[in-house]
Amino acid sequence: MIRWFTEFAEAVDIRIPDVATVVDDRTAAGQLHLWEDGGRPVAVAGASAVIAGMSRIGPVYTPADARGRGYASGVTAAASVAALDRGAGEVLLYTDLANPTSNSIYQQIGYRPVEDCVELAFGG
Image 1: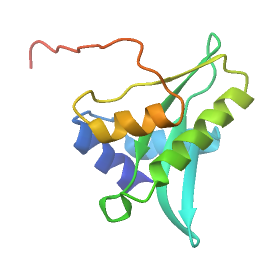
Image 2 (image 1 turned 120 degrees about the vertical axis):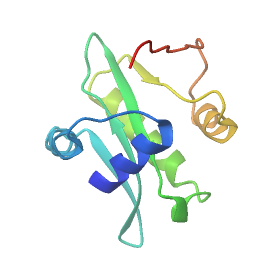
Image 3 (image 1 turned 180 degrees about the vertical axis):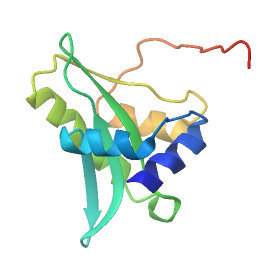
């Protein structure tokens, strides 16, 4: 999971301080959902703790050699159901508007676009 979280962060250009601790904490909290094929992990999706009736899905990651087989769809749907089962009234998922594949997949499993966001960072 540490390698996958690192690869995910690089792919989406974010910084995750102390990846090992994040993975350990989220694993201990039951917030990471693995999809397996033949006993081999092939995708992961996180579902955050329910706060104010909401849970956030993320990260969703499939290593390059396992993409295109529906694993991300399956694990995202499973993580979403788990969030609802834990009492979330709303399940949120942020995605990159420039990635039509993920946007299509998320809509196929029931997510609907609500709004577009832009994040700007100033300084060093």
